[in-house]
Image 1 (cartoon, rainbow, N blue to C red):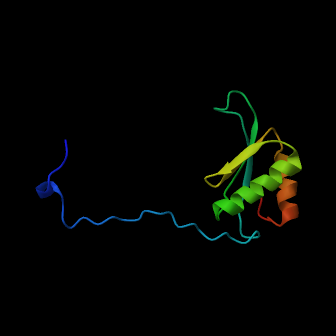
Image 2: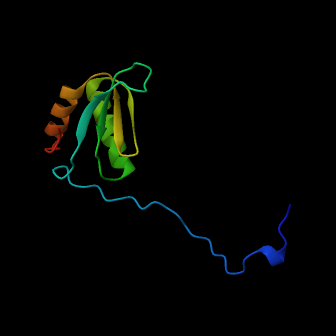
Image 3: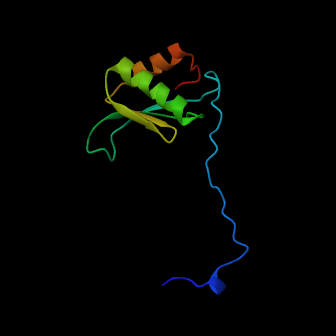
Length: 104
């Protein structure tokens, strides 16, 4: 059914609902948390890094660095970096070496 003109609201205005990307915090201010997770992943173990505040590009760049240093795959989106395998201690050491001092 096609709406007729009398049903349309003449005062309707389109709203641009675009996410504003937050500025990336300094490495020393980032409070990153590294956990091992197995639940809901078909029994596969992954290392999960969350708490990153910043742009998606910076998140993906950090994820790319960690994946290449660990030699495994993974993903980076929605403020989380997922590294395939159990690399908690190595990831913490890599992050601290990169300047992320508040990593646990």
